[in-house]
Length: 120
Image (cartoon, rainbow, N blue to C red; front, side, top):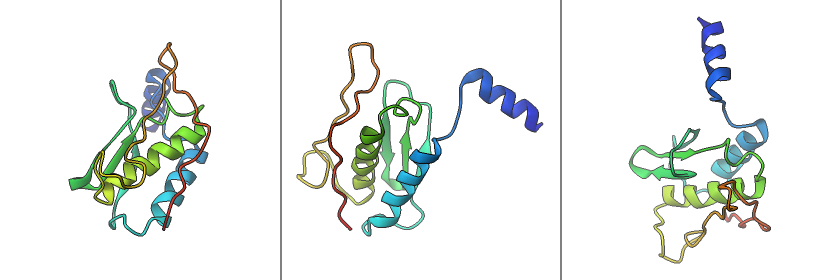
């Protein structure tokens, strides 16, 4: 059964975060005191989105594959999305709520030049 699972993952290109992405997400979750207990960041294959948050389930969904070659953007996306877990909404002036991912014309993600600083 395990062999079939790994074959399907390889065939359809469904993989988890890279180890660097996972460490970065864990660090941000651990260092932000406003994030509720049992919150999680999940690697997800998303259509027409790079990331979104469901605050009621304390879940952040991120398309890690699209952000694999943009580590600074990945960091900023996690900061933005975890801010939703802290109760922030777009346009309220709180941390990273005016953040947006930039794409190249071919649809690939442009890596940001600067990281958003993460307060405790």
